[in-house]
Image 1 (cartoon, helix red, strand yellow):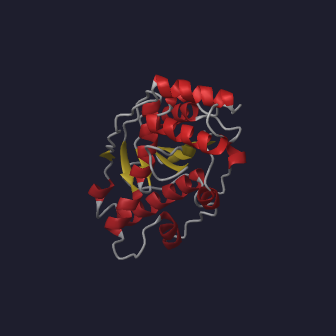
Image 2 (cartoon, helix red, strand yellow):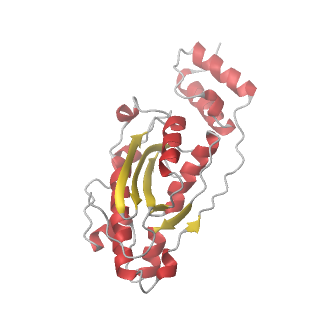
Image 3 (tube, helix red, strand yellow):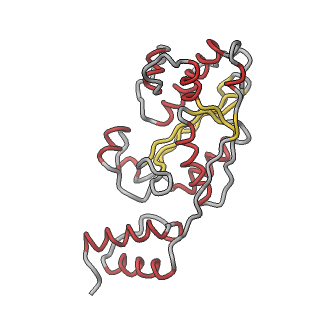
Length: 244
């Protein structure tokens, strides 16, 4: 990827994208983070990592992203990858297409590992809505077609992040001079709901179930919420039965 050419807007930033197990940041998990770091108009670093989510992927997610359970088996867990990503972003503003979706997942993941992720950001989807109000669709796919941006592996985090960088560049070059205010980063605010972690009773029962049915522990139990622990317990009982 060549250096980007911008006029006067934000010229140092991290553009990122994620893939997830679903759409709910409270209950679903990140399975891939991809990012491009731009410093003073130059691409200086990349980030691309898969994450083992501790749950099976639905066929819908696999069909959409091309990521399957086998690909995630050897990947690091959330607490490791998310911390590396937070370190990667440093104090840069962030850019994304529909950025609050991606930000909410990382914000909650950061909360689970007791890390901070407070960012100013620019949403290219919002820019497209304001600057291309005549277009029927302002999805990343549609905007890539509009600006002839090559994104052969759409719905993979790193590729979508690269495409979003080029979309941002095109938007800046076309509209910044006449609309500088819409390109100003804003503080991203996502209020994380108070997480109720697994109770001691749930944890002990879950451990007993796993041992009784000889099931491997696939994720740190202490990091589970009460609802996640209940869901896991119900799935084990449904598939393997209760303890006798």
